[in-house]
Image 1: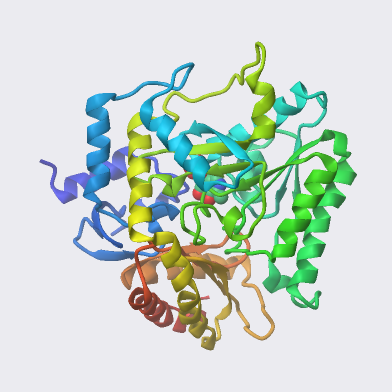
Image 2: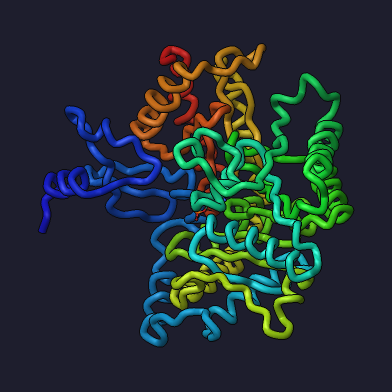
Length: 457
Ligand code: PLP
């Protein structure tokens, strides 16, 4: 049995971590955090320290950690049918999960294409859009619009959809034919627009403008998250979604809702498209579909898109070995049972205003510029000057968001996301099982950590 010290050394010697700066691990006293176990809304590290899981690990563990019944559902399925691919065959958990997902999705959606992760689901949606138009007599439609600062995944296709230049730079040239439109950052737009509705209308009109700039005959799809994570929980007024739908209809552009984070209760419904009452042509989902217990994701598509694939000799030449893995589907079904039994979606809707109000208290700190979000998904934007909404410089962000904050939050026992992709934000997305007592706990920790923040820039 490896001692903790041996395990630490082996981690340093062998692992290549994701999105991680490795050099601090090799510095004197540098340690890779090694997570050993988890229960409810907490997890523990190798030193026995306990943390509040403020972002559901990676926006995934929505029903909380340590649910025996999810482990049992996986074991039961593996004993019956361990694995079989979805290549020209189906299996019971996959069939049942497709049916279940469609019963929760907006009514125009009628097919589920499983993938392993969210980036693959977006990749799939783009490829489907391209082939769909080739089969329906508009072969030039292939371009995709996405929103600035949005994250859609890391494969070449999904990264091309991503609107974060710093994340793409090392991998250019990427897949051509993607174009950025503004996101719905109302905090930064308030000085130029009277109302959020007016701003929403303006932002949606940029989608039309870009379609016209690029020629409607060449534009296949518009991808957007109902609440955009990157940049810090950008919500949009109803008029934005309505207007975007209208524009997509007008130019025959497919509307893809990236619900990789927003799905499965995060915004208080199975899908945020339902919360905001709009009809996407495709929904991509992942993460909390299994509450992260096993990898699973999917692209849910409309009748209209599936129709040409249902005829003649056509196929969609695309797929993944482990997509729709039977054990993952069985876990997803059990996970959705937990949602139903515990009324988690309604719980989020009821508690969301309480969560927001608790976080709003942080605005009494001079470093807090904005608190925004919906459901159990909030961002706190940090600024150098509250009244002037002054952004931090790159150097200040390095010190604050890379240096002080992540460490101070972890020391205080809170795992949350300090994001410096452009706007300086702390993101919170706790398991949906938490309530008012935990909102207070989160607020108290952040209050202590942030009170000292401006001394660290
Ligand atoms: N889309 C959004 C909105 C995401 O937040 C993520 C991951 O965080 C992805 C897509 C990519 O998902 P995955 O990491 O499962 O490929």
